[in-house]
Length: 219
Image (cartoon, rainbow, N blue to C red):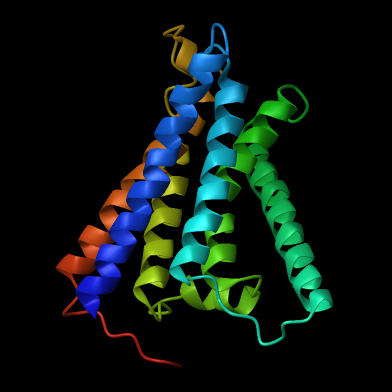
């Protein structure tokens, strides 16, 4: 059972990681002068959109998205509305946190919000896919010993790696190197993306290595 779940997770993570590669390569074919640095906002939203679509599709195909107790149209619409609302609130939350950490308040506001969108795609969207719009389940997963499945553990790892990557990406910005990747928020988005990819790789490996120590019990 463990091996089946871990293999399924590794396959899903490989597909999600490949979506980032495709989101970087495909625009370069159709857009003139496309580059990660020169047209960074295009690249950022290309990655965010690709990861969002692939995440939703993969988790639905694998049956990871939690089933609904009700199957009425109104309930589905309400669930979709709450998911969109939570994602928007997540973007505003990340935007506020990034500003409090020193990002310009008004200048480059679009770039700052775009970084918040990317972080929400790497973190909040996966919470919505795995746990649904259930704040209590989110709090449970990110509390100590709160994971109840390998996917919960995966969510912890990918979220942590994405946030740490974005944080580490901010360190080179003040340095007087005059590199194109030091323009706000290029290094942070690259750091977040690298952290997310690292989390996708590390999660199944870490779970496989510690599978004998992991015990998931309903609480």
